[in-house]
Image (tube, rainbow, N blue to C red):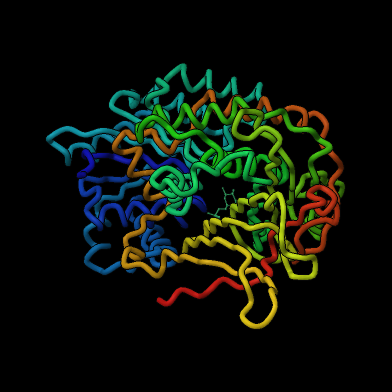
Length: 476
Ligand code: BG6
């Protein structure tokens, strides 16, 4: 579907996210004809002008674009970029936007992308109001959406002073990942698994997102954020909602949002005793970090969704920096059969329960592990698996990066994959006991899976990572 003519006003246009994701993503949307009536007005505090901004964008795109970019594509895109310094004031901003819009005599809309820290977001909204750029506009806001319930409410109220909720798109890029969307396809387009997607058959769920990268360039931002606010209250809880929600009545935004919010409403407040916070050794020596910092760079927790489908089923979430490997998995552990004819020593149950695993890596994969008979005399059992890799299909090249997809959706006004004020506020509500009473941070060595306490948290179960078996490499 062709997108309406749009001027993207990119706040934080020279920042890290713009460089790595937003500028390459906008070029790709333009070059792939999904948004061919597109202009971009970049703005930031950097001492740039249009020419140096174009140069900046060109370098960023060359370095970070996930698709090959031809000279022709760049040349077509290049003169659609302009820049205005953010301290030039609302009139200059308005003029720059109007100049961009003059290329769309048929009429156009505005998309304000706020790639700025939360403190700056409110003044940007006020400036948009002063500049008269609220009408015909949508706003994409970046997390964190507050730091607790009170601040989230304040932020939402302030946003609503100038913009209607229907204009607001709170972005969570995990929900734009193809692999995350495939959870919905897998669950709701097939009759096979949905009947057993239930506390009667599922023992527990793990959502595990270890990262190998550290905080070299971001420690100052991270120091006041920490792993819980940076990753859990945003990405991991959103993925949890996709995994746990009831079948929506349709693929419409309201239907999906309603089911996600029902999951959040059913979540039990977090118990600080079910949380392990960690900090990698060396973090306190970083620039911008205090020598006694209590900010967690790692978190693992157990939470519950207290509804008919999930009552009593623990969800284990884990994420952290400088860990042993980078992965994003959701693992559904099935209950063992109630009785077994296989004697102990046959291998039954020896490698844990059967699992269905979604790997949300950029090259999405899925596997189903089960016990099977080893060939030969007697009845020895071993864990086997069926694996699917999206890379093996003919579709693999058609993927949109998460940010590309979400910007495209916002341009078309589709809220399906964005979070709402209600949903966010509820997540802060369930977080409050942890925020009020955080357990102490435990040190861990870089290159590990976190502090030792993670094993007590999940016992008598065990963490899926590191995998005991290798994934099959895709054939292409
Ligand atoms: C960001 C967090 O939102 O997500 C980062 O701020 C994190 O700390 C990143 O590294 C992970 O996203 P992805 O898509 O690289 O897994």
